[in-house]
Length: 139
Image (cartoon, rainbow, N blue to C red; front, side, top):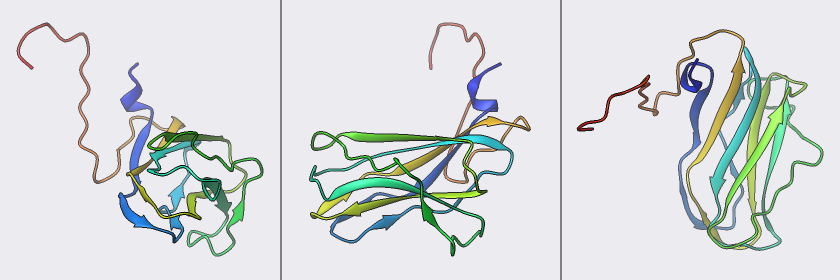
């Protein structure tokens, strides 16, 4: 079985220009998935620039709470972050990028995995194809 039928890729937040305000991704509904990995990039490294993950039982994240140990700071300018949450205790999750120093952000994606029901449908902004044992030739 191929990966594209068992994971869901979602653009959780489009790239943002340099600023110091926090950036919160869209709320990700974990129903029918075991885990989620958030990944993206931060232009400028600083101790005040980091990503963390929150969870909540409410779909509007009105009860959002930080998940212990999820604070991650990229090591070098332009580095990407990847933070993986397996079996969150509540249904809804989101990533929050705190920018203590002005920094631009690249797109932030959420990759939901271990689908309980397959095949899955990717996010609305994701154009996806699956190829099984393709022959060599013109792409």
